[in-house]
Amino acid sequence: MIDGSKLPHDVSASALYNEVTYWAQAFGWAPGQDVQYIVFNPPGQGSSFLNNGGLCGRHSDQSGYIFSDIADYSSTPENCGGANATQAITLVSSHEYAEAATDPYLGTGWTGACGGSCEVGDGPANNVCNLVAGPTIGGSLVQEIWDNASQACQGASTQGGMASRIVGWAVSSSHGGYWNVGSDGSIFYYDGAPFEGTLRGTHLNAPIVGMAGTPDGNGYWLVGADGGVFNFGDAAFYGSKAGQPLNKPIVGIASSIDGRGYWLVGADGGLFNFGDAGYYGSLPGEGITPNGAIVGIDRTLNSAGYWMVGTDGGVFNFGSAVYYGSLPGSGIHPNAPISGMFPTSDSAGYWIGGQDGGVFNYGDAAFEGAAGSYPAQRTIVGIFNTGGDAAYAFVANDQTAYDYGTASLIPN
Image 1: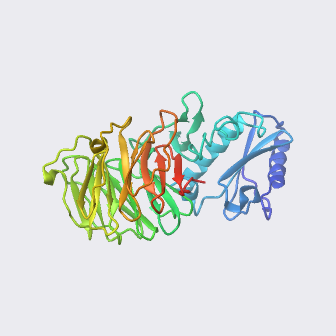
Image 2: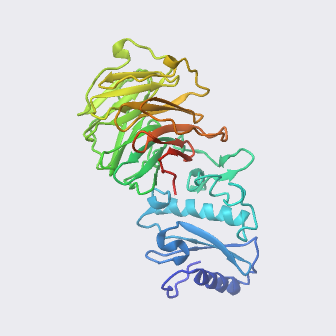
Image 3: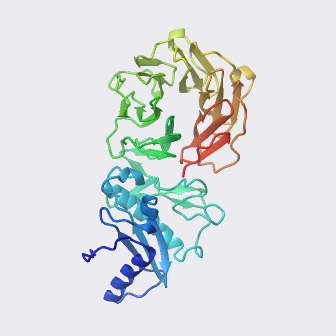
């Protein structure tokens, strides 16, 4: 129903209640937990109930009436997970609907996702389910919700043949935040990192496997397994391997120090350089076949070299990159495959991270802790330095973040 009467100056909890009860009484509907009312705000409508733009949606109850308020996304759908306003509306509406159904009278229903204070649309920690795209129902995108039995967000399906799970990350250096990217090109941004565009809803020839940020933190590149490169914000396009034969799929991308070039690396250690990113060697070029498939590449501080890391923790250095050690070199057999590495701020050391949250430090990289036990469905997809030699963070495939030392990059 559309209420064409004069809009209130502000949508407050009392204004929502008045709107809901007006229509309920007009149609003879009784209050109760089996009935939900969802109010959609028109463009430009202020809402103190939604913290004046701080929330995408919110549900509450009053005198037995269960209701939700959904923000207007006509100009900024990306702020609430959508590539367009329709996607943002259906994602947020499904979030609020699921939470209002399972916790209709706030705090009296199911709030067990994180020991009693989170609802099914949030998840057990750091909002791991929040606005994560799940299935498409009747052509509408809806959100995954938390399931205690499987200890995971459920409802995942595929969009264009690729699941919306996190596969990469990048730090927005000047803004102090970071981005996550899903295999379908969905972008999630935290702590001030700017949204510069997404591939969600775009047909891709291959899944996205990684991302890199520009030096000023105002743009990023996404790379597909076929070598396709997609640039957003102030990230310029310098070339790609899309449509060209590859011996092995691309697994990562790294930006040169000035952002005027980038490297792509393949699972066999093949190296492809574009723009001002220099070529300093590759594993096939050295006649080396890695024991563990290569999973990532990182450059040195001066951009005159790079490291590659394999699933077994093997490290390969090129150009000015110094070798400080590796898991095979240390006689270590990781309990889970390695998912990535990241150098310290002075390039005099690096951390190697495993899919199980294990951390292995070399050179001047300090050990500040490792991820504890967590559901088997959760896999660490990257480790990154947040400044200095004693700060690093993990990102998992469900958006969960873990930070250690002086790092502070938990999503909000």
